[in-house]
Image (cartoon, rainbow, N blue to C red; front, side):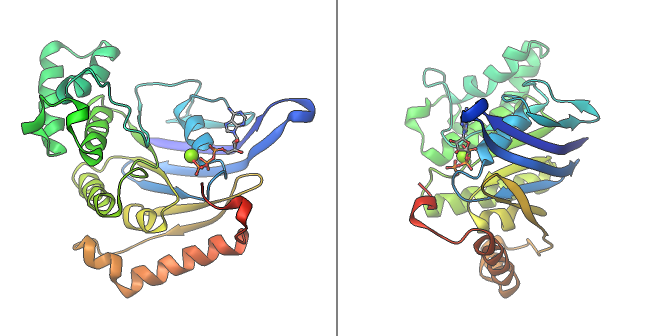
Length: 261
Ligand SMILES: Nc1ncnc2c1ncn2[C@@H]1O[C@H](COP(=O)(O)OP(=O)(O)OP(=O)(O)O)[C@@H](O)[C@H]1O
Ligand SMILES: [Mg+2]
């Protein structure tokens, strides 16, 4: 699998009201790679993810998956957003099964087996009958990830998936997602404003600079992930984090207007 973004630009509105939000974005993600895109609020991160998902159309340039242009949403891309987006009236297992049943090509037997398997992968096999409102935010987000993975996507697209979680659960979920990636070697593109999250999870980190959104820096990481909690405090990790933070500062001096919302 290869995901290829070439000369991608996006303008919203027309004529006098036209606003260029993304300009000349280029990057590639190969099978089994975890890529992160970091940037401050309003730089166009979600717009970029929506373009990759096929929910928006490029104004210029092309996004290809295995050579084929992306023209709309498809089951080859699994989506996970910040706000869980589970169906409140379905229990956890039914939520995971629902995405597969929509696709129409899984048998009932396959749906049952895959639901059980992916609930187990995210550590919620014994909670399958709970309703979303009976679960914590972290649990709900694990179900959202299980649901996306169960549908068998070629790439997982995540937009601030842990943004609504408190710091502790957030770290737990980051560790969980890294171990999941290690086990499954899923191909993933993560949008985040959390530099630590990007460096911990991704092998490739692109910085999205604003006005209009463009990739200003790309970093490649190579950490020892044996103990994730120690890694977060290791000198090589903190050093890389500082370099990434400085790269972001250099392109976007902080002002009250542009602070994260
Ligand atoms: N459908 C739309 N029509 C017009 N403008 C839009 C539309 N979607 C996004 N924008 C504009 O594009 C810019 C980038 O928005 P986007 O949501 O992609 O930013 P973001 O980096 O995800 O921000 P945040 O970190 O706050 O989520 C914003 O100025 C926004 O107002
Ligand atoms: Mg966003």
